[in-house]
Figure 1: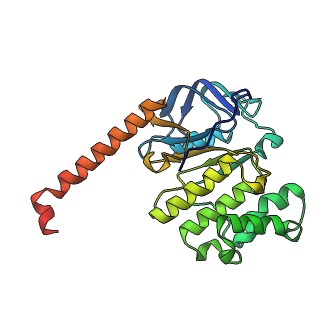
Figure 2: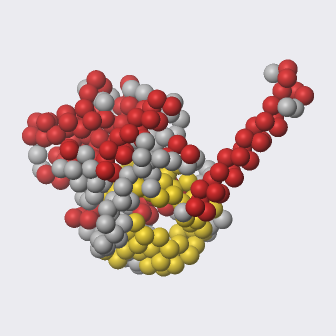
Figure 3: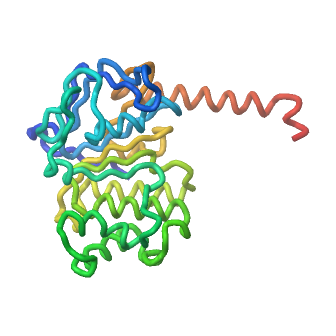
Length: 271
């Protein structure tokens, strides 16, 4: 599967960071990242890797404009977000779709109502007025069969897909996904690879306009051949490009060696 093609690089970045520092909101006093220089152009498809606890989720919330940097400069969708003022205008927020880990659906609503919720809120309309668009997104994500169910009654993969539909309902320019492939079997992983590549290339549902994608992952390997740009969070730095792929491959090799070593322990033969 060929990676998404990059458009002519003339447009201004959607996201740009210079000398940025991110402190952990979960662990006060801990610096997650420092001296980050990063830019995301229209049409990019980034995957950000890193070990558990490296700060990928918090960095993604920063990229979505939901939290503030501790220092440095951060420009998101033509808005400067400083450590003192991180308020992103509503018009800019509506251009960003976010899928947090697990889907984060409202359990008191059906799947279809969850998908329609942002649209109905921002367009001041009833779900009946956007049912065609909601049904199109349910079809795109393969969730029509569970549309009338509660998120509590469906499997995690379907919750993630419904969360994707909800993140797309306002036709975002920038789509951010937190570890969407975690815990999925190979068939489901391939579904996500195909669908996100379609969005990055420009799907007819969105008038053929490419959506810029940023996703986090524990392992970069499943994203190769789909994503165009890679980075990892390591030692409080954002390592980008070939260096990121090399570091990820080294970590994967080390993990494989550890698994093999454990399998060769005397006690492992009797388990």
